[in-house]
Length: 598
Image 1 (cartoon, helix red, strand yellow):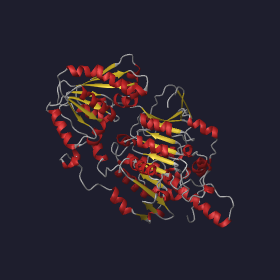
Image 2 (tube, rainbow, N blue to C red):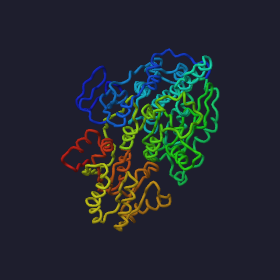
Image 3 (cartoon, one colour):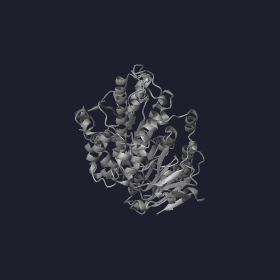
Image 4 (tube, rainbow, N blue to C red):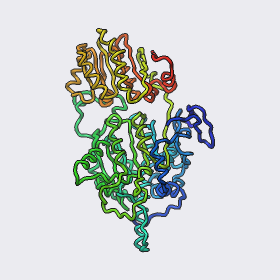
């Protein structure tokens, strides 16, 4: 997509030097090769050597930063980047101007194809890397993923943040090694402040082993050639993170993955284990996989795998999680997949980062940076979150748990919606639920459903009614309510046993159960094709707009089908991905509360 196709949509704006000012924005080691780039100090060193005052730290705790400026997002038709800072970092096309280590530049150029934008494959990759290397927090909420957009775009984005991560690790290790040599030769009395409480400086959270495999393979491609000569435990890693040997129960039952949507097959074609953690250490001439966390530079883990380790430390005195005390870069990739697992693990991990350690772990306190001693580690930590879409949980984490003094950058997109992908003629009635408080929205939705929707269902003798529910807690609540009302219904949730799934689908199709309760996570993990749907009720909107399309199109072949969709003002992000940004704004502001699409 050409950059000149991009457009903005944020009210009154003025443009100055390519930056859009938002007028009405209310939201949101041996010899070390010398690097003569002036940009070196402008990024890595400048960020870590900044002296944060108590007053500045207090302001960062107030979460009052506004997104004041915007700039057009390269590679997107209708999207822009917003920042809380006074300007955006410059987008240099040459790595030599961006503070990248010389030996990293060589390996980067050696493994990249089609460098058409200076040292980058696209303007989008260049722009995103400039944000990463500025050490600001970044929320990339429309990230092209391999299971939606293909390998090329996905790899471009992954390569950009991996280059930044590697550059940060190598600069950290080179600085320590250089200072060690200087102390050995000069016997300086004053120790350099060049370390944290513990060695790990980068944490990357990923949802599945198969994705961790892709990332580590790419990481090993990008490391300088001197490190590639010795990669320890590589065979073990590929064995433990490679494709699973046994077919899933679903495949064993005869449902081939080829019959599933392409994005499902791409995402779940490898090792789908979501419980893992691994440390990686970089030495002068090698890369050590499975290194002990306290001797690692980089930790790669699933949220479940890491939160389990934290839980063990909280229960057993001989264990701890002090290895998280000095994390300087946190990357959360494929956050949309993690949302389908358990996002609360990410928020819990965020609370454990940059805490004062419980033990010394052999650290020379004279060399610990003052920012860590002052308890300001979280204000220097850069967080990069990447997701194909965002939601309230991701936004809350980005705004409340990320307090980088350098500021924030986030992507805002204008969505066309997915209604045009509905292949059947179906009346879709949207009902807006009025609720003034986020804490009351679940109760308000339940009351609206029981009084307005359920009353009609109870009077009707019609079967084939599917109720789609995005939240497991709402699923349990409706299940208990239907039991109390002695309704004829069946369940299809993420925890439903395989034998019960087959029985429920058969009952529903043959009319032995009038109603089916179906969760978004069940659809995410299985992509069932449910037959016999005559009426569809979206009790809550799905996170993934494509699921709205898939579930609605399941009614194909039925007669007189209709759907009812409940939404509130707090569903703005979900709604705009389904009906489109322009329509969503009108539906949320209109005096009318009912809207129909055919």
